[in-house]
Image (cartoon, rainbow, N blue to C red):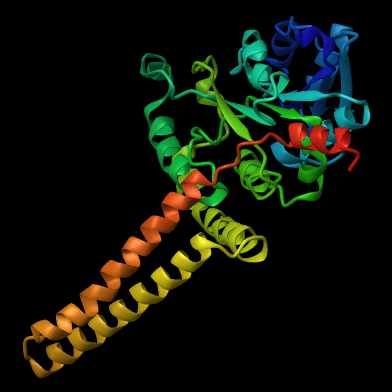
Length: 327
């Protein structure tokens, strides 16, 4: 079934002369093309790729370094223009097992998802291969990404082993996609705005060159929050104000106002009592605590509705339905 699909692989490459040949040779799945995007490497990566004489390989080169995101988007664009139906993204560091390609694309072929990604956290026994600091950092980033993207069932957001249906590629090419290490997370937040169905696929941890990884999730935990904060409010604005002012919008607005009002009232009277060196009256405490409690419950209910509002219908199925209906 998978063999009837036009499937391509994009490999963003930067100074990967030691591993790129091994990665390409290991791809024994019948793909139509392998787009190796050299991101202005300073080693002999290009020469190594050319020496393989692999007819599947299409070598693209960025004149200046664009980052993993910029290189991947260049590969996506070329694959889309060439008619690829499903495009996989693999890194050039040999940390992704090509034998897992059938599992990664299966949900897209079955019409269950529009975008799939690896998840190294589904089986605890496999996590022993993951460095401890990376494990800790991924937990923090995963929680923040859930809120920013709206994909509450997705974990391991920095996993770069992904597959995408061609219908989503134009959204990414025109969207706010980060060109550097925030790339994978920015893809998730952008797809969330377009209501794409994203599915995690179990991919065991594999770190043959873990010490050479350029990304530290723990460091990212202190550099990514501002970006995630902005994308979280952007999602709320687009999804629950511009597109649908419903219960989530009302509960969020009312809850925020109650928490702010109760908190401000309580802080004011606490400061006032401290200056006068007098205890705060119980009634005043209740007048502060009650709005905060009610507001918290409303915000919690809004969160529940948001979790239940995760996309369910893959974009390609929706587009197919409209096409068949003559829309």
